Amino acid sequence: AAPAAAAAAAASTAAPKAAPKAKDEAKKGGGGGKAKKGGDEVAVASKGPSKGGGVEIKKAEDVPGWYEQVIMKAELIEQYPVKGCFILRPWAYRIWELIQRWFDGKIKELGVENCYFPMFIPKCYMEKESAHLDDFAPELAMVTKFGNNDIEEPVAIRPTSETAMYAAYSNWVQSHRDLPIKLNQWCSVVRWEVKQTTPFLRTREFLWQEGHTAYAEKAAAEKEVLDILELYALVYEHLMAIPVVRGTKTKAETFPGADYTTTVEAFIPATGRAIQGATSHFLGQNFSKMFEIVFQDPSDPTGKRKEFAFQNSWGITQRTIGVMVMVHGDDKGMIIPPRVACFQVVIVPVGLKASSSDEDKEKVRRKCMDYYMKLSSADVRVKLDETDHSPGWKFNYWEMKGVPVRLEVGPMDMEKGQFIMAKRNILDPKASKVVGKDGSVVEDVKRVLDEVQTELYGRALAERDARLATVNEWKDFSPNLNQGKLCLLPFCGDPECEEQIKEKTKAEAADVEVAGGLKMGAKSLCMPHEDKYNKDCPGKCINPECTSGKKVERRTLFGRSY
Image 1 (cartoon, helix red, strand yellow):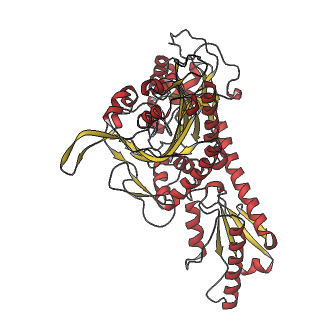
Image 2: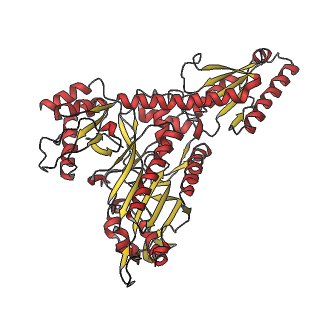
């Protein structure tokens, strides 16, 4: 009772507001944890916000309501009549394209090739790897009819493609010379979620990439696991200005069929919850043994000994966009980091009135076009807004959509040989303004874009690090957790012990759930790879009821999570 009371007291004023509820849409690519059965179907954003205007809900007061309004008013999504499915509008899909283009180039440098496998998984494949698909069973969508006729052998719509791809791999591999196989596909998958869905974070159909590779040597396969993990970390840190923790999942959170799962974990300061960003799995020989992906051992002079291939799978999803909105967005709408911005700069003519002469209007128009051409030629993604809306309307519209820099061009500044830039990441209108020189427009704009990217990452990192707590004793765990912090704990790694921790922290947060909207206990996020997260780790598990007897060697990151 005492720890529970302490937890409630600590969180009564500090607990973050409720978050959009989202279990992990991708056990493989964008999520973690087990699916829960039952519950009513609910679709977040079922009622759209009022059209026009700014965000009507403060982020600090109601994160779910704020998120719903931002993704609608920023024109990221549109509703769709199938629950859990949402239309990705061009503004959202362009962000996904920029992520896709960067990551696709990086994996091709590693020798990965793109391919496409059918979305339907036949029954014979499901039976071969039933243990793997059993984990997806509650959300597996089946095709059982065509027209008015029953299908003789129903097929599943892919929730992931291991079973769809590996039968082909077994046909392709005879010799060690046929390895490695390095394939990736960009596609959608379907997880027929039965509970609440949230756009980008948890939807029934979502976009992702899934890589599937096979190697003759274990060391080469394991190296790739970490190479891909680092690319995922860079998607978040380099492109999206979001810090992540690189780590390995506990046994309880490992992808079904994998020897181990590595992950990048992000943090949403507004809700005090972590969110899994992407995962890279070492499958070992588990699937190659099921699907007979074998080759002749080149070291065997008889040529009779067979070896099973070592395999990996890895994926990242459209969840990246939702994480970006929640980490960087503010009460004016989205803030998009320049490296993934559809338009990095919007040019807005200002300072013109109805009484302005045609000559002045033409001068401003020509100068705007001059800047547009120079920036476009320098590979800056730029938009010239020549619509007949007022400058104020344009300011609000592009701020809502998160364009990183607004470039204002008016007669008075032109006379001074300058222009004004407004940085979207700074909420104060005056503090956001930067003066640029006409003669160095490209250099000045690129410098400010770099500043915005750096400042967004710096702020997100500072917020994340301020909410990282190193905890050695149980009495300090829930109070920190209930303040919306992530906790680095000594943990034995035993699945039963982890379940006890989840239930104990949920019980100790009972009062907090009402006060701050926290609906779950703590779960393990990862065992961080970097030593900076592992200082002075005690050798005993933090759970007072732990019976595993295992010596703790590294800290494990725990927190509330999507």
